[in-house]
Image 1: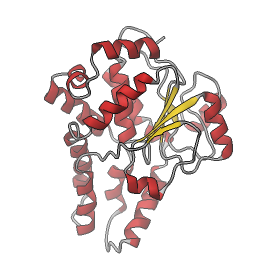
Image 2 (image 1 turned 30 degrees about the vertical axis):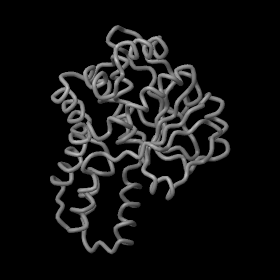
Image 3 (image 1 turned 45 degrees about the vertical axis):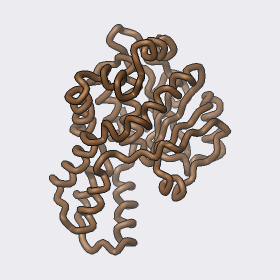
Image 4 (image 1 turned 180 degrees about the horizontal axis):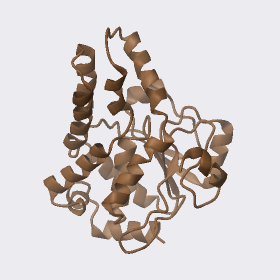
Length: 268
């Protein structure tokens, strides 16, 4: 289902998409079924790209939904480049997350050493190598989400696909949602995000940086999402920690008692 066909459901309490004038990749992670048959509650965790384009009407919409906590995973220079519109909600914006070796993507691009295949591999390897690097930030994030269980949390990065995608995956894993559903949620960015527009923006940065040569197809792995990305992340967690539960336990300090509390609050 695309955004237009779901637009008529936008403001109901049980729809995936929340259409905003300035929203980017904006959607709800509710409605998924856990392994024991319970449903993730709607309007508890929203995910999106940056908030710098929100209109006054958008802000009213989000406040009416009840958003009282915002988690911004972007680095400081990203926040300065595209400052978020103030929602009147508590904002946590000092996570400053990068995904593994993604900087190598830009290094290779600047040197002219990319191909479509190597570009894809760099992004996938970034997902594989980041699991310990991102753990301190996601550890704090998961506990803050639990503390705000009575409220509505909005999580975002720049495009709402990589750092936000991993955060959503960890929440759903803690709620005992099956892997395939977690993957499907990650891949919804293909429906709700304008990849071509991001590629245009990146190409503008390349021109400004006086990069002499690139092919548009090299940028697609970085600007979109792929099943390989999230599957590699989940597999790396299992290979390095034995299971997703062990990663939550040992890396995020989000043990069984925390997960029970989260499920009590977030599952119907």
